[in-house]
Image 1 (cartoon, rainbow, N blue to C red):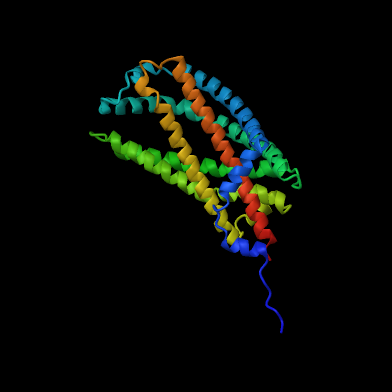
Image 2: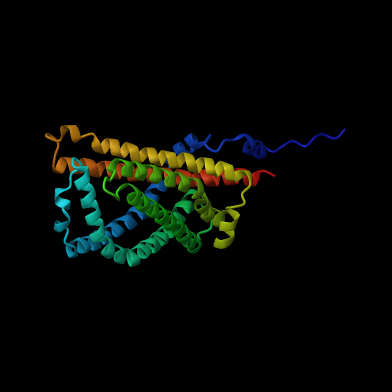
Length: 307
């Protein structure tokens, strides 16, 4: 009597393993292999330092060329909401033309620089984690450019929604500043959640280009047709997106911790505290980004081994 075929361990595991079930082990692995995080920090912070210097230089030139004193910005206070609304509108009307003129060339330059740094730096991170992967920075750069374009589209949608909120709540004889900020928070959280749900496609496409030896276009198309693996990756991406949002909240809480003691802790010590909180937040965020890559690769290999 013929025996029934049994499922392979990989197939059985892929069927019952939740997307977030092994995240703790993955966090432990990344923590015990600090070289992955160090490489990630090296390329991210190198790009970030250059980008910040460029933005600081251009921002200083922009502010120096625009007279802000007539807008009343130096008398801004939330205690007088009507006056604060007028000041915000005045500052926005003054800064909008030169700011948009600056962003026309600065935003594409920063986006291309990010794609270039990410494609090269991420290639070294992946090859460090899995030496059997090919070194293909050009494919990763192209896919990162597509991700930047999609992210830019989400920012355009966010900006349009914020502008609609301003036109709805701040126009008229009785502007509602509280409702405006409430809409800004809700819209920002909504777009952040939506991006966390769909951005996994752009996150997994570079990995597929290396794991399956596909072109950039083929790997992007393949990322939309992963079958049951898609659910696992969406779950991991959403959970890590929530973790990053929690990191933002924690950073805000720790930044506000010294404020009750502002009479004692002020000036340089306070600025150093804020700088330390910022560095800790960025390092933690990069750590979870590395964990996301490792999780995606491990799940792909589990499903690839399944018949």
